[in-house]
Image (cartoon, rainbow, N blue to C red; front, side, top):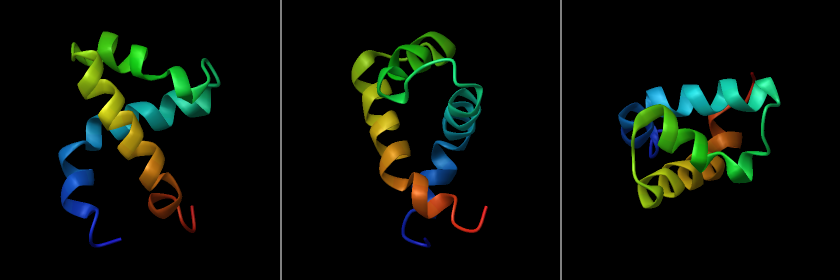
Length: 65
């Protein structure tokens, strides 16, 4: 996990938002980039990149949770 900690810290607010969104069941997470764009005012490319990183690191970040 130490390899992803610097990047995770950079996107901590977005990742926590995505975790809450997932827990709410409001949307399928494959479509969550739209929510990131709206919530954080980012462009689609950035939102998709952050969402992809969130998905790629989800299991590792939630081990033992």
